[in-house]
Length: 217
Image (tube, rainbow, N blue to C red; front, side):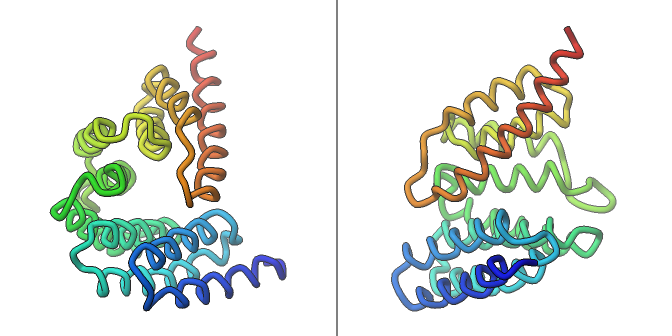
């Protein structure tokens, strides 16, 4: 891990803590910005510990604002990202906890953040192993993705994650269409870093999809 990434890893939590007692929007944005830094800019070997620390901060957001769907959404996102960084059977407990947070957000307002709880929960259902190991369920994942698309048809995240799901299902033409929508998604104010890296993920998946489509010609 180079010095720059070490500095980022230390300073990002200072920036989150600075907003801990300020208003909700500032605290939420601090968590979002820290998530983007950990998820995209830290070395893979450092992500697990960084997400472990960020989970504590997102939990404090829920504690301070228990009636805001957005706080539950982002606690769930951080928990699920931590699960992904951790991997293995040890990640299942984190995935279960993330599922509960996202369900709590939906109970408050499933339209919050343009249906982000639906998108994130759909992704969990798609990625987590099915019974008897976990709660994964492709039918439930697709149901949630489609409901999220109704709320935010042009969103970058929903179109990317649904395309990723369709790619796994070998539905390459449909995946291609949603990736085109993701490429054309409007920029999100305050989420510039997340948008930048998500577009790189869109490009990576698009290359895989196009390769599959060429083989079918």
